Image (cartoon, rainbow, N blue to C red; front, side, top):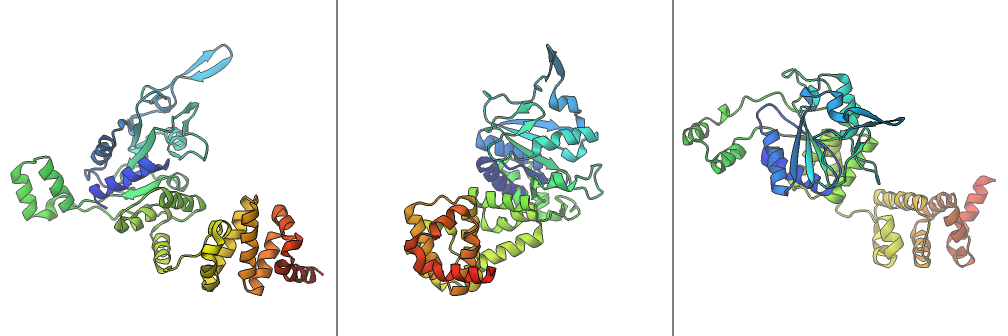
Length: 353
């Protein structure tokens, strides 16, 4: 994507999630300038950390003692809880010269777990502050360290490349020298020497798919950028397959929550679903109840109605899975539901014997 598109994606992530975007691009393409512009447009303060010039003490602070307890002073760059919302830019992450510096910042760029805050050693970052990373690609053209898979897996990689039309709009807004603008209009190929293709070899993992889920729930990206964003998390092959699957599903599978909370509305859709969509609903119901088995009386009736609507083999499989959840097993054994679940329970008994 070009710098303008990168700014759109970056603002959406910083505004709506706690994830850590990592802007990857060749020198001079506008990574830092774009990040600064996003901060200005969002009304956030900006702090730059040049990690290639920093040591561990610059990140975690200097130790001091109070009585028998060791503490670490807060670094001068660290925004306090009372500071304005701030974007901390970890620039040149892969230029950190010392291994322990890279290990120290590892914790800071990791998105906080649910209910937690981002931390660096003993320091806790207020949730209103966010973090963004930028790097040059490790393609042999730069004196940079290779980042390990565990660190890459914790960031959303955003690839930004040179684009003449994007640069031309920026040059006009900034009133660049007219001779420069006209020359590059005639010779756009001389705007920048194309570098090696950007590819950090991202791969799908459980954490990566959770990040994709977070972005899909919280952010709205232009359709033409979705694939690039998700490819920066799970890799291009998985991203292409995922978006193709999404677009091929003209009729999305009914979710467990739709079944439990609004069965009369989705009953006809469930009965008409193809087998692959039926399997998605089936598994979603099991997984949802395994996590939260507390049901209202109305949700109980909706669940039993859903079971009754399934073909006999699926009904047997669903009841077999649900009776392993104690709270759900107790409600399925109620006399009022015998007509629906009795044959499935009898089949389970025969199988067990």
